[in-house]
Structure formats: C-alpha cells, structure tokens
Length: 65
Image 1 (cartoon, rainbow, N blue to C red):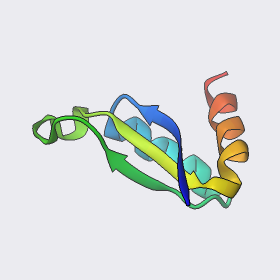
Image 2 (image 1 turned 30 degrees about the vertical axis):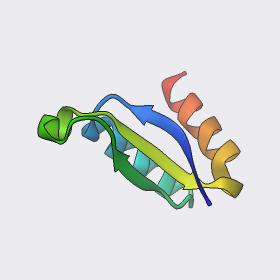
Image 3 (image 1 turned 90 degrees about the horizontal axis):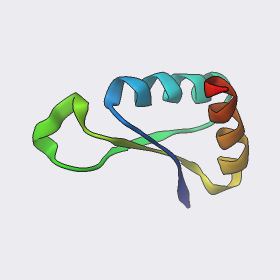
Image 4 (image 1 turned 45 degrees about the vertical axis):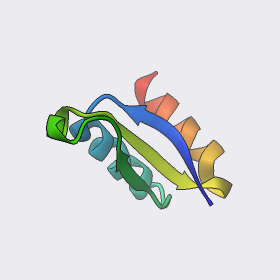
C-alpha cells in the first residue's frame, strides 16, 4: 500500500525530492493532482510504500530544515 508523504507545489520540486528519496533507497511514485492543464505547475503528491513512510518523512523534513 502506498502512502502520501508530501505534496510538492510543482513537478520540479517533486522530482528533486523523489531523487533524494531514491538515493536513500526508498521507492517513490509521483501523482499529479489538480488541473492537468497546469502541467509542471500543478501540485504533485509524493507516495512511498507505507512501511517506508516514516523514514521518507524524516528525510523530507531534514532537506527543508
């Protein structure tokens, strides 16, 4: 089961965080939300396996801290 750990304000930030999580060995999936016509400006959910959600949240928090 996948769990949303962060909602990025746009695709470039989501992809940067996805790379950070992957470098830490965490599987990730991106899912755009909102209006499709916004393209890269639309918000994007970052999902990870539920078993890795706590670790992923800590990595994301550390990257913004």
